[in-house]
Length: 444
Ligand code: GDP
Image 1 (cartoon, rainbow, N blue to C red):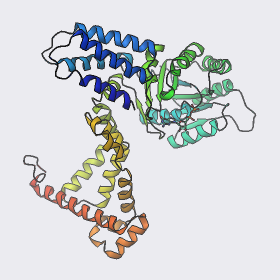
Image 2 (spheres, rainbow, N blue to C red):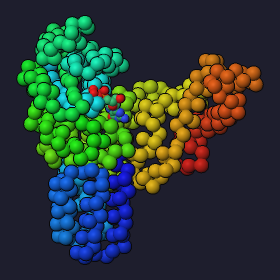
Image 3 (cartoon, helix red, strand yellow):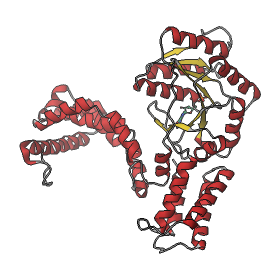
């Protein structure tokens, strides 16, 4: 995400390093580089123009700062301007005073609406809501089935027209879905609508009709971050044709130049509310303009990481585990649980990517072999409960069986078992009250 832009901005800032103060020529030079970087990232031209004007004005007028050197000042200005074009404050869903809250999705076909419906439903469920999906995309073959599948994955109800009744009327389905949600006491209704490959009048009319029929609390315009300069035209067409209250950016995980992300707020005046970052239902996050700016500038995104870590972390279970570990027992199941904890945060490369300053290790992170984790997990899962509890019993013939069961080689099993005993020994030393070996002052 934003890789090229990130590199280009970094190199623009690099030229400022070591300068005691910035001349007009320095500012012009850095502004020019930033401009080209943004244009190459497909940010819309008017947005770039305003961005650069603001940066130049603020950089020229910047007071001599005790705290920041000139390079840092420019970085800060660019960061502030990025936060501004991304929308400033985080915008959260406005729930209806009288449930159900109705959220309607609109956007081009392939933008990721149906996938998003599942992601949003799962996310709402995690917030303690009881969402229901309504399938009003009767245009695209399989859209209804696809919504039923993602609804099933998210574990939420899906309201869909009876199959075999012809194409059906999406407005009627929307109205009936809303009535059903009221009857069954669902407190959020997510209405998936049809998209076309390009903008067309009939599509807009249909979306506008659904909007009029269900009077949504939020209309989310779903847009593929990879569509480049087309983002402007598409967003404007939906603004005029349907109007929307917020934007969801999808496919931010791609090697997208990401221009849509940086343009859509300025072009439409509507806030970006969520970001979709992959095909899995959990690849979804609230959009925080300040954190996204930080990520673009590679200042890391510790807050997002912490938020995700908290979600993946079950405090009660962790306390129980800690107690047991402190009692000196560490089993293969504990190791498996730790690996699964990391997996819940997303891929290793994703986790690393959110840590500040990791940009310089980009290559190593991208090359990190996630399969290594999968291999270890497969090996542990091929062990019997007795073996996991007491790996000492894992003799030669058991190793052979485990390697066959997990599709690995005996040397992989050997190396895991050896590593495990090393970890177990360290845990036991900590439990004995020594603290972490080699780290005085950290009690066990
Ligand atoms: P719709 O036509 O707007 O309902 O779009 P879909 O939900 O069917 O999504 C179109 C394609 O994009 C599917 O193959 C999805 O798996 C994929 N997709 C959706 N969101 C994302 C995302 O955030 N990242 C990636 N990589 N793929 C996505």
